[in-house]
Amino acid sequence: MVEEILQMYQNLELRAILELLMDPTWLATGLKVDFDTLVNECGEISCRISEIISVHGKCDQKISSYAIIPNDFFEDIESLWKGRVKRIHLEEAYTEVERAADALSLAITEDFLPIISRIRATMSLLGGAKGEILYAREHGTVWFKGKRFIPTVWAGTAGEEQIKHLRPALDSKGKKVGEEWFTTMRVEDAILRYHEASSKAKSRVLELLRGLSSELQSKINILILASVLIVIAKALFSHVSSQVAATIARYSASALDRLTTLCFSLFQDTKLPSTKTQYLDVERLSEGDPAQSASVYSIICSWPRSSKSSPLLGDDFIYRKIRTTASQ
Image 1 (cartoon, helix red, strand yellow):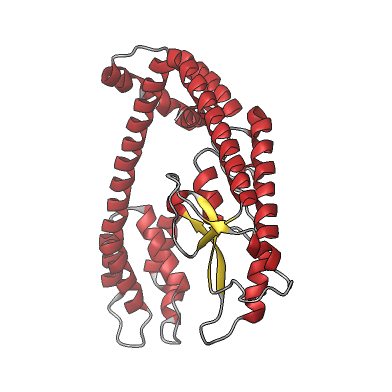
Image 2 (cartoon, helix red, strand yellow):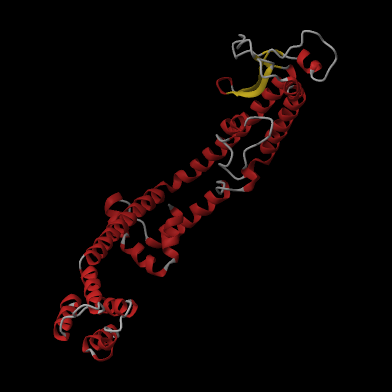
């Protein structure tokens, strides 16, 4: 909102409107602030906010992403705080989260991926082993879900060692989630470390935002005045736009249609009305308005001309009348 005030101020035409809107804003808020003071304060507020708040779309604010881990897991956790403030203020917290995410990806890759590869290699169409890495949203973690993947005979083949390290997944109360959910101590430790790093980063972000809010508390009158002024400006713009649109629609639906019909009749191969009638029609439709006369002129110039209509263009004084009016 303060940015919109500054943008209007930087435009000479909008600046005049901005000054005119000060009086109704004073009446609406009861806050008497000098125009120059408002602009200067908005500039200071904008600079302070831009120092803290992150610009949307910054490349250093991307959510963590790994091919082996469902994206929803990182999205649900990091979207709560990432992209809110500029990274430069929390570089250490960001780095810690990234390292924890890397460690989690490595743990899942080494503990779960060999089992997935083993299952895919032995998969059959008749109810064979199944397994996948899933995000358990209600528990806020990533587990391995599978069935019929434990070998009946251990032969030291690929993936067996990782299967031996699996243990049943437990919820926050220590209860077994289900027969098909599994994890490892290493993955659980990595998940815990990632959650702690993300929670710490989130707290730091909230701390920064609270500090900014307290700082701007002293500018509350300026913020209220600026917000009300912008609301009034937008309401005025909306009202003017609707009136202009209604005027254009009224012109398009009536006069322009009749002008087009007249021009169409001028260039048809059928019997044309007399020159005097044509002149009176244009005079009536244009009503002395150069814009409407120019529209007739434009339509006539662009309309396909037949051989019978060509002589009309050469010596008919309606054409000269339109040309003269359009040039006024």
